[in-house]
Length: 109
Image 1 (cartoon, rainbow, N blue to C red):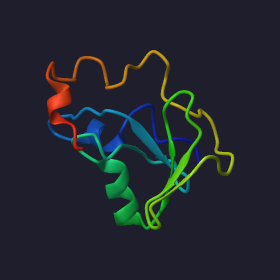
Image 2 (image 1 turned 45 degrees about the vertical axis):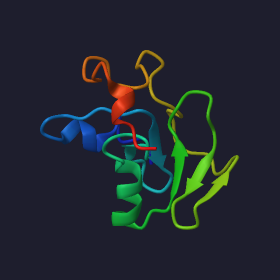
Image 3 (image 1 turned 90 degrees about the vertical axis):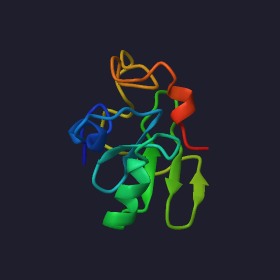
């Protein structure tokens, strides 16, 4: 399945809309969610709710996969439908215009 969009699907539909630090893409259904450092932690929430354990980084230059069930990092994995990462014009954190000036203070560690 192709990615659900260029950013976190859950942050985009939230009211008010959220922002993210980095993005992860579900290897099974293409859902794009924000990483566990992000305020919403939507990628891991998707994995828990759907049972889709395997996610790939949706960041440029990163090809690794994370297994949320086993908590294991894989350097590579199955080929996924494109695009392979967020748009290069989209900043991280993103999206532009929604990231607070003190964004680093809002990250989960």
